[in-house]
Length: 126
Image 1 (cartoon, one colour):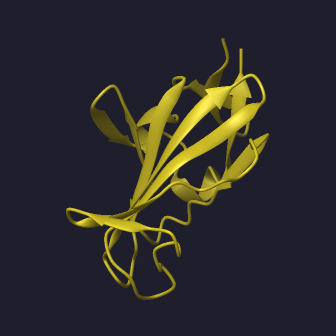
Image 2 (cartoon, rainbow, N blue to C red; image 1 turned 45 degrees about the vertical axis):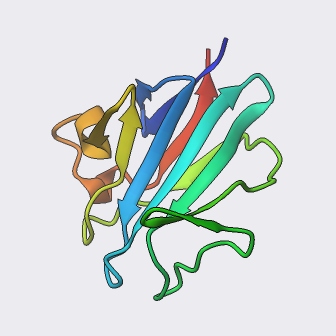
C-alpha cells in the first residue's frame, strides 16, 4: 500500500497513509487543516477545516460550521503531486499523524532551512 512522502531536494521523508497538513495564516491568524489520504491512484483530499474567514482564506461554499471550524469535503480527483511552499517568513507547515503534530522542518534535515527546502513536494511513495 502506498504512503505519502515529502521530498525536499534529494531528501525524502515517509509520512503515512493518512495525515493532516495544517498551517496558520500569517495575517488573519486563522488555522487551516487538510486531511489527506494516500491511495494507489494518488493523494486524496478528504476534508478541509478552516477556522475563520478573511485575507483570502474563505471557507469553501459547501462548508458546515462544526465547533470552531468550517468543514468541507472537496471533490477533487486524486493528485499525483502537491507543492508546499516554505518561505521561512511565516510559521512552518504542521504535519499531523497518529494524533501527533510536528513542524515540517522536524521531518526534514536540521541543516536545511525553510527557504532552502522550497518547494517541498508531497507525493506517493511505495
